[in-house]
Figure (cartoon, rainbow, N blue to C red):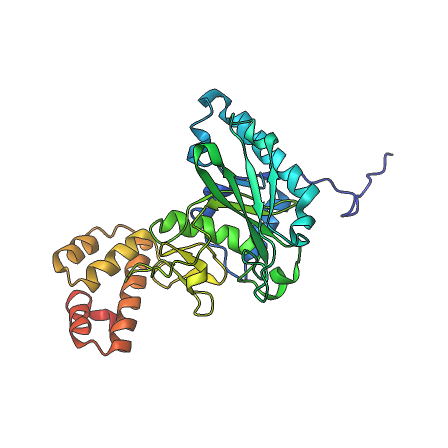
Length: 317
């Protein structure tokens, strides 16, 4: 008789499950400060690429469509090789330092330069933060400039400061930029492997003090300590530390639409939306929208809003 061999867990070779691209996933799912490990598990346990996004439009325009995939792959690999080789040196430069990167520029037939800032007397490094530092990646001949944020390899930020670090900030940046492009800097590419980075539009070196847009229906908010001028350019976020969904932002599109209709006292629109309720999912959306509006009416002691809610949905109160 042949004995069946039982493998220990360390000997098993479980296949990595196929998964949709992370860029598509992150445009639809928020990763909170307490669940960023979900993204890590997804990357480590599933058959999914650790690279997100696509080349910036200025660079895409210099590549033929049939070569775009190959050039994008080479861009990621060459940038990654450079960062693995040089990353630690960015922390040691005493003056502003420029790196010629022909390995990247040759892909687009134009020179490429990476700039790293040295420390200023009594100020420290102007492009450095608590979890990483920023370099400027530029293609001078085509006037294309990008912010390249590099993250420190310090896992304590992921363990104890869940609102910071690459796993949280990169996922939040992609989602917020997609959901509210008027309020967030444009994100192009990112990597969640080796030297983790995020490539964004360049917002400028100088704090411009332009206030953020007045938005009564924010999908994302930043905590008070982080929502400061240095973390914005042109009124848009350039840093996503401690940035989370609002109560309004956690609702579905239908629920947010109904919420806005109620807040605007649009009786005809509300009645039309309620009449289109088809299933339990729609009913749950209605309950969430009504619940949030009722909470606001009670908190603000808004009698007009409370009366409107009673008129359109009397059993809610």
